[in-house]
Image (spheres, rainbow, N blue to C red):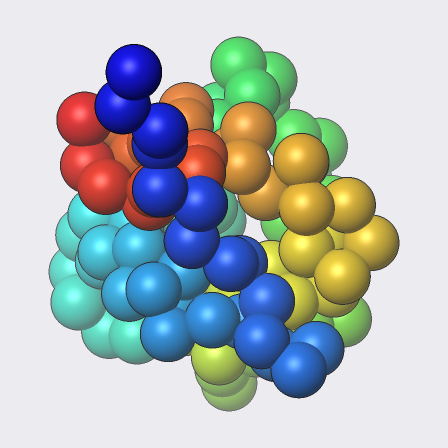
Length: 112
């Protein structure tokens, strides 16, 4: 029986290179205008695609404030990675669930 490859999501309390690659791909899928940040509409689309819920506007504003925003207050790519680092350190399975929602295998990190 073929054993599924388990790619670590964290290496020394940082996002693994393999997970970073997946998160960059996901970020770029939702950064429609390619400005390096998720405007409120783009971030709403990302959250809805991830968990089926439209977040309140306060959540969208807080994401940028807490994890990293551009001049408009929009979540930057660095902020997106910072959010995922915190979430993954807290609960790896939550990050696996998120990347599965975007068509990746939660263990091998391969696009399905």
